[in-house]
Image 1: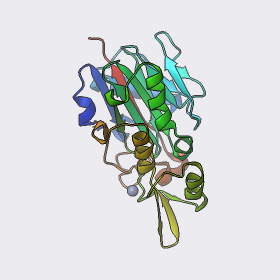
Image 2: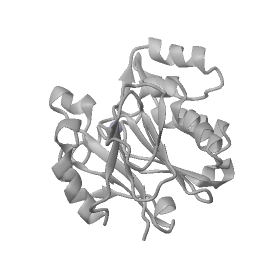
Image 3: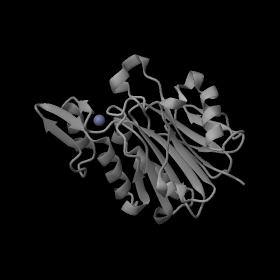
Length: 237
Ligand SMILES: [Zn+2]
């Protein structure tokens, strides 16, 4: 299965997708062959794959043609180029894709709680604007990730968010003395704070832990867990 978002499917020459477990494990070491299969189904064969090292930072890299296929020390990728596949690997964390419709800028982000604590989703909006984009023209899509239903955390984590981002609302839940964190609502509020309209924001409705048969989940599978791949690309044909 490839997860898709209607909001992004409507855009001409734009290709995107969230690859389910059926496409295999996209861990950095062995994702070349699996990518060929996915690229075939998305009509992206022969397009170079560009990945981030992903170190739970808030660093974003601007990608140019002929860049190396792995960008070290970043968790966000952005490009104005056509024909490059920006890709993010996740297993519970949020894969987030961006598109600036008028300036033709695409972006992709990997954000777990550490990235959210650093406001990486919001920083990507700021970065797109630095590159000439406008907030009203940006659409954002959030892929499968661990839902608040399954994301139990220590009580210190919600406190950390309250301290760092006091404007956040309703992002944690206490039930039977257990604390749960809602990564999705944190991300949505960060995007809305940057001015992203609700109608320009879409999410793929899946919890990686609840629907572990389809999506890799570190929470469910531990060390044997693989990674899913999220891709976005502007095609030049
Ligand atoms: Zn769940």
